[in-house]
Image (tube, rainbow, N blue to C red; front, side, top):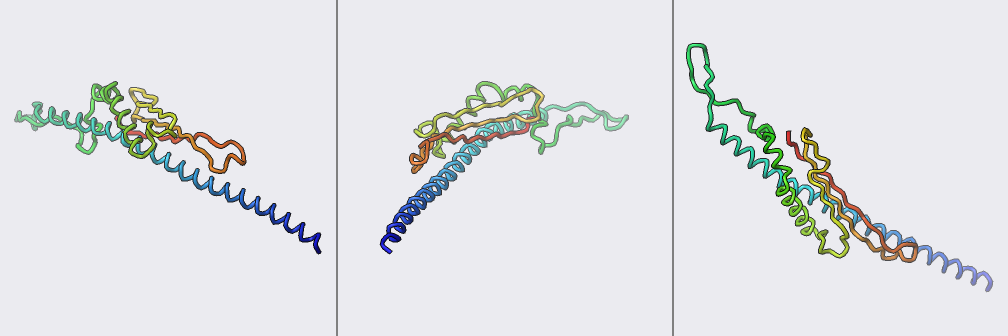
Length: 191
């Protein structure tokens, strides 16, 4: 009987260690999943904030084009017997990109706009706690306009945020830190 008690204690000690390891993995896994989701949401928000600035610039250009066209008219006879002035043909107001010309599109990718987009992205990342002042953030990569071709239908903005993560219990099981990457690719029509 005494011999069996010793075996039960050894088995219980072993099971206790196994249960602790499983709990450690579950706690680290849940925490890492939450951190990965937060990083992804921060990258998406930063990308959307950057393209919001591009959209504002597009709206400004479209309004300018609408004002210019509204001041000009073309003589188009309504019927052969009259020569009344009618407004020039214009794209519908709901089609913002229809108001843009090639000069407007080149402005959307110009260095000043690229700089403004980068600042907007970095500011939004900072607001979400994923800015460069956060010691866990190792790198933020901003690519605007990502893979640009002049005749592309869309302008793309790519964001990549690298975050160092430490495992609470991972030191027992292997490497105690790693890198998470939050990536976002946003697009806005230019044509």
